[in-house]
Image 1 (cartoon, rainbow, N blue to C red):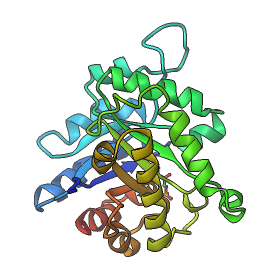
Image 2: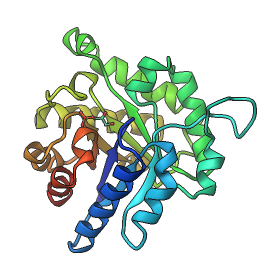
Image 3: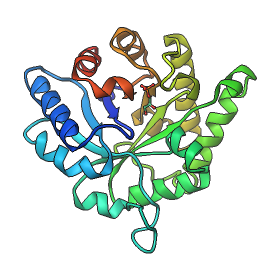
Length: 253
Ligand code: 13P
């Protein structure tokens, strides 16, 4: 099964209006000169989504948000709905990032509601899962990942559309730490995720869902990770804040 790879940059809570638009514009210009195979998605902070869209117009760059609320609208001060994002339009949204799970106490049940909200608005989803260091060391990785997948996708078994759902496997111990899963470790885990997805949906659907790796992806480790059969792209944090680092990752596809 040939799946089109995605390289997504998660800027997290970084940049200002000026640095965000400059960065995305420089990336757009650099990419325009190359024959880029992968789908490129940049996820800036909410206030910079529209300015970044303007600054990367006429390029292949798509924009994504870093989170959504599960309701369409209402008294939820400070929150942003899928409907709002779709109206920009913004094409992607990251859901269930481990930093949201940790700092905003997002449970699998909340994440499930967010996934349903995004599906309803036809925004493409990057659904993040991943185990902690302790969970890996105590042999809990596969249990944790299958629970996150089963509970996150509850009620969607028959309707999850492969084109609108991607999974990002982000081992928490590899995020922002410089520690990276070995290509063998990552491939083994991605294969497990695909098998779990095929149990939840069907082999046919699971074969079409893209599974990205995230966690200290850098120019020097991207090629080997991305050449694994079940790794269909990368969700890049720190290195996505620099064209000099992100471009070689994109080119390593
Ligand atoms: P780093 O690439 O900085 O480790 O971050 C990964 C990540 O959390 C992307 O969502």
